[in-house]
Length: 480
Image (cartoon, rainbow, N blue to C red; front, side, top):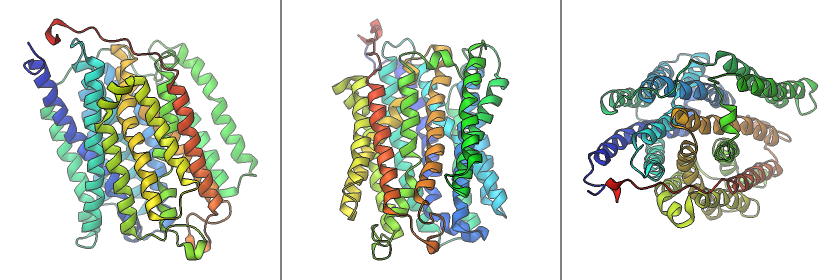
């Protein structure tokens, strides 16, 4: 009997189809707001600079909710937690649509950050669904590539839609559209995804969650103080050091727990730590470098001596090219994995990201150079977004797949949040990133951003090269 005639294969295809709908909603959320943030600022009667707080709040909350939600998925079932996170995301989206003030919108944006656990939970659902097929890891990688490809295409749809409608309707109606998409997504999950019980026992590790929350909070607070008071602030570095120091008792505490919120022992495994370290380093560029790239493109070279002097329309084109190549990188993941092996394809993807950002250092004087740079970065980034959760799942025991895949998003988000603060400091060292009227950041600030992203991606490639070679899965008689 062939795979195509296997009812399980048909069932898997159906599940992936429904999960594609979820990633379409995720892509809309990720692409919809960026082109209209200036209009949102006008709507809320706030300065453009205050928009940065929306991103910061969402990243921090996202980093904190992924570990407990991923752990909860292993305990009660991944579909249940996917429904819960979708309901929370819908709530945040509706709050943003009707927010009368900056504070309300900030709260809604933070709550909306629960969507970051969607992809890890989906990969965990697929990984468990393919157990016993003899091709579990291969099928999971293929499905993850399809999901991320759908995600990236939806990012473009979201960006184009909001940009086209911003002048045609009220801001409230405009902001209702992503809320509607997430609400529909909840219905799709409810009726389209089969419910499977959790495979792990025990409860949530509230002590560990509290410790990691305080540690991350101290580090981020320190970076915010650096941005406000400068790099010479003793308080800022004291907060950062306290946050970093707290990770030691946190790790020791987690080692003593039977069911930790962060499974330190699992993260130390040869098949896990390179993947999780890569997710952290990758987050610096895929999340932290977005605003600097946009502001560089919009900067007038006649005024600042650098920049592309691009319109908002070209920035949308730049984002579109980047996302299209991310989709290509995700969709071609099965081909690159077959050609270079799972480990080799991961290393290649990281090297592409490193090359793309390194090219920004000498080649940043024309729109063509920018498009080529972003295309190369997009190819590597798309493949990493798709392959990291699958690689984490492949190296985890069945009762910990939700945790392992969730941690890739958590560490990526932490990396992005820290990089966002560091890059803001670099760019505001000799000017103002928040208020262009007060001055422009020095070109050296942007060179620092690109250098950090390139070095981080190169370090990720080195870490991934230390992954053990994947043990081939034994085919079952059904698949021979």
